[in-house]
Image (tube, rainbow, N blue to C red; front, side):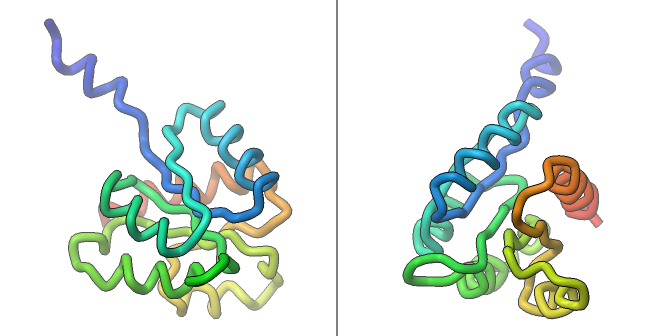
Amino acid sequence: MDETNDMAEEKIKILLVEDNYMNQVLVTEILELNGYEVVDAKTGTDAIKLFNETRPDLVLMDLHLPGMDGVTATRIIKADVANKNVPILALTASGMEGEEDTILSKGFDGYVSKPIDVQRLLNAITEGLANRDC
């Protein structure tokens, strides 16, 4: 049995943190159609718990969540040195020009604006994954 083939089939795992059902379904569908494994959370608290349980390769984090917001959840995840190379991309409806620096200053490694543009989402994921080993 060739173990190399088994490893090649291991999917990249993305933690999607999104409380809006329609956005969650849309993004999950896009990611799964593009070969990613998706783990989803609807709150910041669940995001931290699932992050620690599943050890994703990348996180897509909505900023506005019930209870703990995405910024706080990101800060908690990034506070652990073991997590510093896991890219966390903000999902935001407020991705206006000039706001990128503000979003990045809150601990995010990039962002994807809503409404979701499929190609921009996939490009941001590819870029985030490429930069994680730097």
